[in-house]
Amino acid sequence: MPTMETIVSLCKRRGFIFQSSEIYGGLGSCWDYGPLGVELKRNVKEAWWRSAVHRRDDMVGLDASILMHPRVWEASGHCEGFTDPLVDCKQCQHRFRADHLKKDKCPDCGGELTESRQFNLMFKTFMGPVEDQAAVVWMRPETAQGIFVNFLNVSTAMRKKLPFGIAQIGKAFRNEITPGNFTFRTREFEQMEIEYFVEPSTAEEHYHRWVSTRREWYVQHGIREENLRLRDHEADELAHYAKACCDVEYKFPFGWSELEGIANRADFDLNRHSEFSGTKLTYFDTKTNEHIVPYVIEPSAGADRGCLAFLVDAYHEEEVAGRQRLVMRFHKDLAPIKVAVLPLLKNRPELVELAHNLNEDLRRFCTTMYDDTASIGKLYRRQDEIGTLFCVTVDVDSLTDNAVTLRERDTMAQERIGVDRLAEVIRGRLGVD
Ligand code: ATP
Image 1 (tube, rainbow, N blue to C red):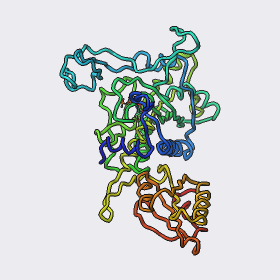
Image 2 (cartoon, rainbow, N blue to C red):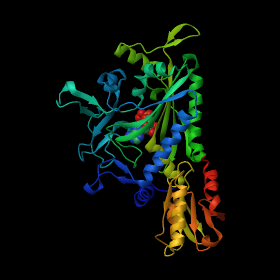
Image 3 (cartoon, rainbow, N blue to C red):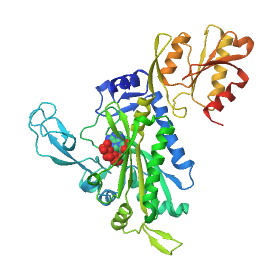
Image 4 (tube, helix red, strand yellow):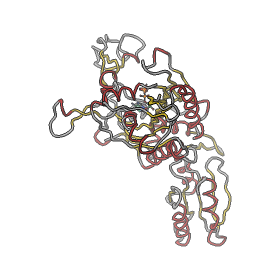
């Protein structure tokens, strides 16, 4: 397994992830996705959306606003309870989360620590020109509440019958006390959340189904089974209203850590919003002619944590003919670039033209990259390092036999393919129409 330093440096060198505002010395725990990182992250979100929404009859999507009515966060319990215990070292002034410390001394200098105090993780801002208490709004610390407050809108507009779910991808903000481990814990991040509403008596069954569906999703997208595990929350870890919660954990270089949490939140959220808003958030069951408050199962994942796990898991170093090869074995749906088109001789205009034409053809249905700036060995190595699935090499023979060499990333197998069949072959292997 690569170290985090290896991953961070590859990400910077090859344009996956850069430090935010780097030329100003960087901004703590904020990261920018570069040209390849943005493709990877879009692909992760697309893959999630496809499986959570497009390929199901019982799910619909939503994109709620980041700023919401301040009462939302009173109802959800975030104003009161979304806190972490904070301690300061009296000697070196470093700050820690008390619940992350093993001893009651400063882990950095051994100094004495202050009493712990509760620190609210929500970012505060002001709406309108006057910065007073009446204008306070919060940057949402999770996307979930946008779903709960739209429960009636969505179920009425879409005429959904239980069980059904609402999925959302969007930014969330938490003023974490100790961010770190690259993009694992940041103060601004993206969540991919589902609220799945069910009849209360069926909640447990749906909960177990979602735990395995979500674990499987990571495996289907290339994460090795041995690097994934499920961890059930102990009773004392559970929120008072939650019936059950299970984390999907990944074996990161810094240890097993949460990728996603799946919780059975019972009827807590809909009840609280009904109470605080005065609008009844219920569902009319036509079988029993009764209004019921559905239970909710919440699979809540992080797009950034997911990307980090896909990056770590894809990383492979191997020896090929006495030389080191670094290859990112991304799943085909996640690889940022699907095909690289590489002309062997850039001083032959007919050959360059053929390569450009092929590139034009291929990028109608997948991401491609054209590169003629180095020798073929070097070009292959560059593409392996960013996980490009296929390299198409155009050589002098292509001008006479009207064929090109198709090289596959993982096996490095090469085959000669007629130009007229190339697009069809690649489409087939990518599984796109
Ligand atoms: P942790 O225990 O790591 O702080 P959490 O249990 O508070 O996480 P949830 O509130 O369950 O996290 O959020 C759901 C998902 O959102 C997490 O599984 C994770 O993927 C993502 N997430 C939460 N906080 C962060 C963060 N600070 N940076 C990046 N992703 C995050």
